[in-house]
Length: 372
Image (tube, rainbow, N blue to C red; front, side, top):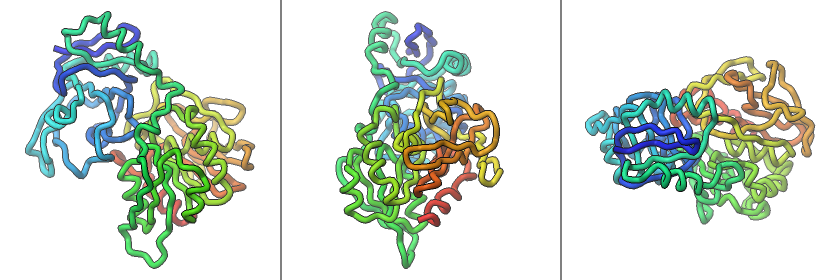
């Protein structure tokens, strides 16, 4: 037997099905119906325990093609009804076997709906997965020793230590060179850029701006990743030196970093946006896209507003000129993207690469390459 415990004392009992041992982290929930392997290997989940809201997890096993990075980044997994099917088409093995092989604790057989409702009502909080041999009082001590996600720099933990180059997978006479500042980039993002003829220079997140400029890229890409963007001033300062010299495009954490670089502020969402069913309105086209999302922080609107009441493209006056809202979350009306009008730069908060998720926003990669 095992149990999930939150820092407020909430406990739910279940069956341990992953690796032996306990784990702590920020407990968050993901509403996707598929893509469990992509989720746990997304570096954006570093430092977190994922609660999957869909009841059956593991139905189609695991495969090498579903890896979004070279390892599992989520610390633990919470499920209602875990499966370990090993014979699904394209599967290389069973989900639970794979978690055990990678030393990731997991738990099944508990009421994930009750747990998710609790997190939704009170907000994401620290917690963990423990076997029943660990007393609750001891588990609470382990949880409170866990560093809060607010103010936490996790980008350094998932960023590479040296520069690498990836060639385009689409033959083209004029490949575009894109410098990627890697704060935890997903492979499907890199694949989408390469399949559109981009040659990628992937830099560690602490690389200084001049080193990047010396490689003469055509554009700068700010990647997704974990942690609090307010803890990344060392990246923000370098992005400020890049703006106006090269076109800059950011996704997820990269969106937040670019916004902070032009002088906007970020804040922590109560329970974040994590799933593959978030409606976002593109204010430039009027189209509604169903999007994949994974983030716990957001950008404040003009005058410090946390939400945008209307569908008009409101504007900020930034340190680099005018910025206009381009994308709006229709669940909670938070900022989902903006464009800089006086220097070349734009962002989206969500994940157009759809790994996992719908393909509605894949065209944004085409737009980025065309802008270069």
